[in-house]
Length: 183
View (tube, rainbow, N blue to C red):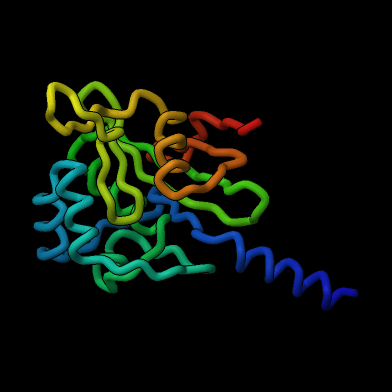
């Protein structure tokens, strides 16, 4: 019975997906190349573009690298990339959040980085940057900012064709800002 319980716990952890890295313990490395990059990535869009061009998605089940290790290895999962994004944006004084999304009827979770900019929110979802829903206004394609965390979740659900059961919004220091259950 004990073996079965241990196997069940390990299996649940394996399926839970995307660990979390707490930035409060992160010490900035003395690496001129890394520091120059962080200085250069001064907008959420630049951060997303950098991640898209330089990082490869690789699931880390029991391991959440800090932003420097992610930069060195160039491989990370949703939490790793959202942590890199909020660290880099916060470095430039941009208000940031992370959203932990619990997917309906599974133990899977997903993480999104959120940035406050232009009187609303923008996000990076893994390496992809979005500043809002695509809309056509006066025959022009534009992306008005998201106005709420729930709007971000609706966009993510539509984009990925998934259903969330709950989400938790954390500030930069991992304090819970909002927790919402999907009825």
